[in-house]
Image 1: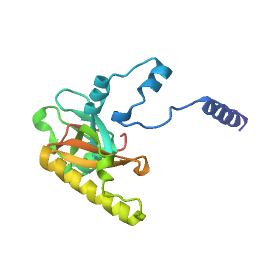
Image 2: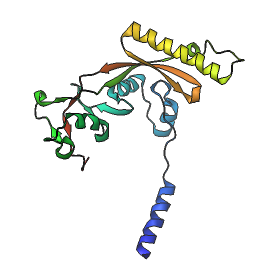
Image 3: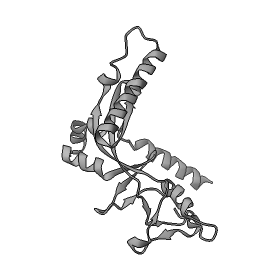
Image 4: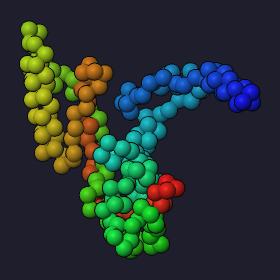
Length: 196
């Protein structure tokens, strides 16, 4: 018991001395100077663009490209819907796992979509064009929703991309995110759920 208490105290003391960097930053508002000052590394715009284009969105989750041929890696639970959809009573992929030894053995995920963020634009002024100083919260929100819907539709019609207006800083800023959409998503490898 005494050893356990000492170990717990040591863990608490060690944890208290650890510090995490604060905040999450958008690609178009990265704290370059802060990173340079703290770590002696100055990320270039090209480096940040490479990171952005290497990232994928799976619905509300994320993943990363790990090959130039489009191979993407993500967490098991992110692909679980696909794993379940592809399984059968005779072949439970969650129990057995799956590995495609060749490209023609990859299994197509019927209901999965990946999105790659191809561009960001600040649309705060456009979203707030219909907002008047004397509006109550409900009217302000309705005006912003209408502007958001218009901007997303215009973007989709003009580019053919998925376009989403993202609310940042509790409504202090609005960015238009443009995504290239991929619907031919295939399962290449998934370990058994028990070890995932």
